[in-house]
Figure (cartoon, rainbow, N blue to C red):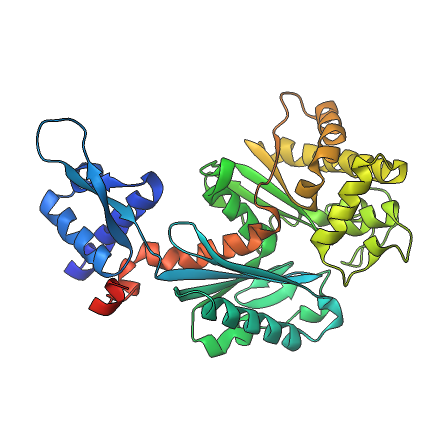
Length: 397
């Protein structure tokens, strides 16, 4: 049997979730939608306001008869979740508040494989400090995205970051005394796609991200598919090609050796070309590649056509197995999507009947950190009492 405190926490969560999912509404409507009494809802709203998670909005005037009701809306500007991404050639940090607004974000170009993991985590911690100092929302948790398999908070496998295997990522943020979650970057990106943007709420989705490697996240029935050992979605290492190019995992024939960023850059540029400079910001390099494609550079266009075809071959396997409502392309696939979609959909149509179900992500390279920040905020929505009641001074700030 639930205690009175547990029941109240559950009711607070129900009201807060309704405000997040459906937007501002009156107390009377909240009572109808949650099945709670108007008096209970009024008390719950009052507490959410005291905790800075809800605010009283404008008057609702559905007609000229009766008193207008005051709308209640999600607030939460006083708290945020922090997403951190450690990738092969950059670090990123993003702060997200409960309304879904980005409060702070930054990315640092960095040759991560060349550095000691402790040094990389120290730099990431400095970025977290900057995020905390530059905005007045209090962080409630940190979620770190890494391009590999994770067990607990320890990296279990990372083909493109071999020095990170066995590293306890959470230890790098221990000084913050916040809950730290560590997860695969593509999994977090898939969660971000189902939480915000044009694909929010889609229950069956495959997310493919193209960076140095190729990652995938699978959402089925509204839940992230993890598999028995957490390897579900590691699509970059599917044996889809007879090629002999070595993969970071130690094998040959992996899909990412054909469609990963490294494969594209090898095909599009010679050694010494600025596009091959790992110390240069990735978005700058992709902007240059995009400019060359739009200018009609034959070598660039041929490289992109090959990548698109290779993507279509692999996507066909995933569509046949998982039957998603949509396959979302993220990472560099989304940036260069205008040149990838035609060969991709052609290859897909040859192998899977029916309409194409491929879309480009609108989240850019923020997908993983946004998904991480979203995960970091979930305890607030599960139990709003984790956010302390504001002082009178804070409430009027």
